[in-house]
Length: 157
Image (cartoon, rainbow, N blue to C red):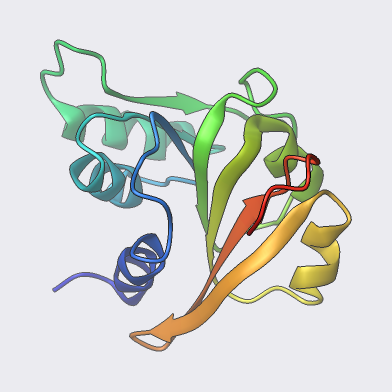
């Protein structure tokens, strides 16, 4: 049986666009969410980052043979995510410390942010960095949130 967080991630993804080419899971742990996202978006390149070297080692072992390099994991001990600006179409995070500025930096304009968990003043914190609230919901007792990064060109939600 999947964890409540994974169930909530699955419910949130149903509210997100089905077109991402590049997906990132922040705080990926041993890779459950990133591997789910890779199955959900079979043509996307999926990356997972986590502070824990042990978790990343376990996630890498779970990927097995991936000749296309579609799924990869990276340890990142600092606050700055190790990816270029506006690189990901979809960024997901389950729990953990919310670094709104960094999430906005790596999400492309009109890209999607999917969060599972509870954070104080979430709409306000993300809104300061250009995210527009989409859907909020609950699945398996976990809250989920879907946001879009405003492109700044008057695009509709």
